[in-house]
Image (cartoon, rainbow over all chains, first blue to last red; front, side, top):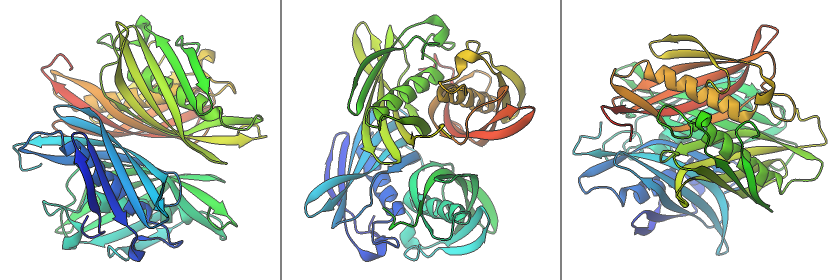
Length: 125
Length: 125
Length: 125
Length: 125
């Protein structure tokens, strides 16, 4: 997330919001945020939302994620907002909405659904 | 793709292969390639595979993509290989396998399914 | 939907709700609604929600759908509620939540994301 | 699967094939197999493929599945063929291709990716 310059806006129990300011090297041929960048942002935001409900000694890995791109990611920033749908002992499922912010107005540009796994007391694999 | 240092290995009708050499800033906390990077690579490789069958004046956009992470993306590089499952007038569907290359050995680390849309003679939106 | 006995509860612009009463032949080995039944219900409910915003002479086809199963589908009925996230000229994207109803209480048991395509004035293919 | 009349064709370690003969009540308005039926078939075939590699005392549940519909499911039968991509201690990931069989010719009509969970020595939840 450092590589792309994302900023944590809010984390709460089962919720996370991350903002990604526009940067030219994150765009594709038309000047919009690249789909891969949108996906990375959605995945990370969902990951933090899920992690917020996990045990202290746990780590979190993404099992799978699915992203629909709804509108061009254009504007001064992207904002991703993720909610936990289900937090289980092993698996956690989140939804994440990504908005393109243009002149302060948020427009939904992508919708993701993400499955996470909690790894307790392990070396993560 | 420039941002992450990806290299086009092969493009054929309905096929594409892209290689991404290891770079520290593409990894997460455990030194593995970040899930977002794996997703970006899969999306791009699928996009090129689909584009290889489209009309000359068309442009391509990702409609949605779904990625399962199967094993840690660790090693000296990632290699993504995408095939077109269906190339329609409007929509194209691809599968993409991502392998982690360690000491020259490829191990499947992610599997994606991607839907693309072909935009003819348009300004892409 | 006749085969499984589903009942349309509500359709509004961009919204649909469908109820599926319990029936023994719709369950798997543990007496819960079968995942395939949950998926069918989610797909149909999303399809109607999307169709509610399409043109009169259009028909609708599912491009792809993705479903997370969150809890056992057990109880006296399933209720699916779908919203349109984006309604485009060609593609429509919906989310659908499926609840298991037990003693009148709704519990989220599945979450879907569905892409639809609108076919105008055509024989559907 | 009894409800829809599916027939197990083959099960091997990490592989399964199931055939579903045409039946009028499984079709939608145009006489093609219903998307929900195609999804149910894909989910079940993937489930058996995954189960073939699990421990004897385990049971299997679908975590999530994603299906792309590629062509109308028309003809005398559907045939689904599923392979295990990864069989882990907890999670198993499968791909499943569904073919529409018309006059003995198989044509790819849907492609699925499915995540399963193995439940050991438990009452399945």
